Length: 220
Length: 274
Image 1 (cartoon, rainbow over the protein chains, first blue to last red):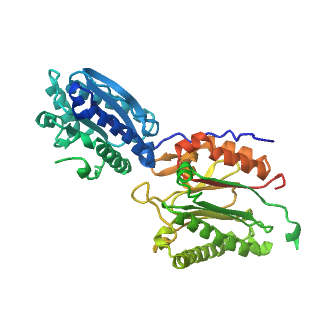
Image 2: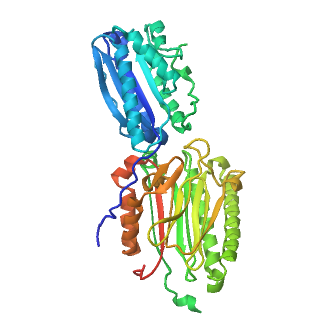
Image 3: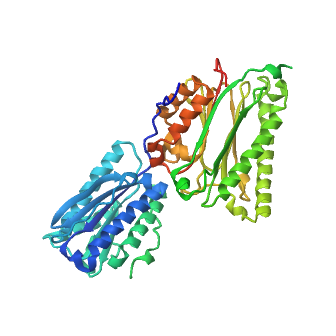
């Protein structure tokens, strides 16, 4: 009698996943115009947008890597429904090459894990967001590897140059030209990212996604 | 004749709980449902999910369910032989199919009349519908427009048939009764005996009750089996109270923001009295 529970369990999320790595820049220069503050507010907006959309909530699998001094994992692989926006701290240079190498390695490992778990996955996305230029030696070889992975359709790469970023060097990482972002528009950028991911989740594996229009945030 | 003292041929339980989204917006639950059984063995179960950001979706869901109450009254008035007989299930399904289609047409008419009379745009009266008419001697007929799902199980709690959600090109789109081409998206399925249990639910519950293989929903045994075992061994009151709690549990509300409505029905053996 009384308040006995049924004792059922809810189904585990087996939605197809869109693996998505975002490299964020915590280097010293992000203090300019409080770009770092705008980035952190933007990440909070990303959390909200991903969780509000039922497709992205179950379908996006997210990892966030920070460059600033070294390279570190800020948020390890997580379903968007469980994503909690991190606080990106300030400090150091911009070893972007190494960050991209780690991102590609992490993507390979995660794809394997998803395959082993019997989950369907879409083509992975890599976002490289920086306001500077790569400061690590040999970054060009990592940029080459990144472009190659893209040509082999292992990953779609999106380079975003914030404020005074070196767009020329950023363009080495992808066949897609880098987009320019004013740090005042981080929030709009992350909302766009979430909307595009929503379309990406609905795209049959193997096909290209029609991304949302970036006009809200890019000055290009 | 025997109608007056007929025992219930079905066990029934249903619950509908508001989701966090609508609770926040203070618009009330936008799901509606109807479930009843008659002395002649007929059972009707229908859920409707009102869509959109206004209360009009919920109004549409309520109108649709009311029309199925009319369908129920019509079927409940049939004699035993007319209501269902193991000898002629095919003609039973044909008859019920016709009545269900008529009911959907009438429900849609009601939506359009409501739009006129209350100065609401018909395209705001968006609601999906999934339901079943069943008789223990003939089987079940499922009918479905849009998302949500219904599953028919055998006596071992194994899936016989699931009426899948239809989402169109993108997962967050679906189809609604009020639309002009609703007949193109009406899916009707006759499920013959033997069968044992039927569950009908709105899409607020499908994510919790099914796993996804691409676009196909497959029942999650760890959801359905305990549900069946619990409900079949309890009175309807106790069962419904526990069901409502399961649908409004914290984990459920965190996973899914939508309203959650579920109807369970099972051919009775030695059912406790309702």
